[in-house]
Amino acid sequence: MVAVNSENNIVNLRGELSKELVFSHEIFGEKFYNIDIKIKRLSESYDVLPITISERLIQDINMEKDNTVDVSGQLRSYNKSIDEKNRLILTVFAREISVLEDEESKDPNSIFLDGYICKEPVYRQTPLGREITDLLIAINRPYNKSDYIPSIVWGRNAKFAKTLKVGDRIQLWGRVQSREYEKTLETGEVLKKVAYEVSISKIRKLNENNNEE
Image (cartoon, rainbow, N blue to C red):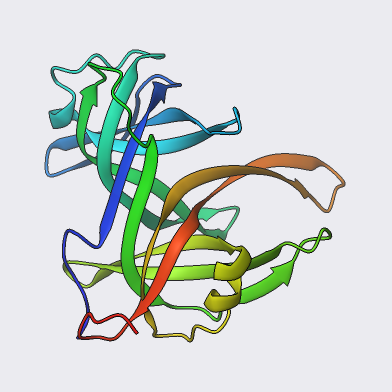
């Protein structure tokens, strides 16, 4: 059985709008826009994450830069042709958004995913000996669509994650992060790029009947 429901991909974000709205696309007369949200980490650095949002959600919302908002939705992926190569693009597809009205304690960046390992895990160690496993998770959507989410696991969870096989069903909890890196072109030019991934804090493997193994 393939798990497909609206609860298998849940993202909640709280942060400052760091850009102005930019038109993205239109589907059946409904316009969608892109905007970035800046979320503070415990380390005092920031994640800057892309959001895709319908015009119907923001008719009565002040979307000016630097406003603080709560966003809930799903982390989605799509392929985009860049320099004649297909690139996996990630965005948070907003289902709800509101301007922050109070200062109540709340995790500003959380995600839950229920999906399947779709690529062999890649285990490695940093020069300082920290263990890391890279995962690619397929999250099913209705109408035979799937989102492919790059994820990273640290420490003792990395040891567990490296034993996972393609097709294994897992649940994971963590946060969505942005990561800057440099790419050197054949010309020698160095480009600064940004990658998006899920940093996993908790992970478990499931049987198809939803029981934890």
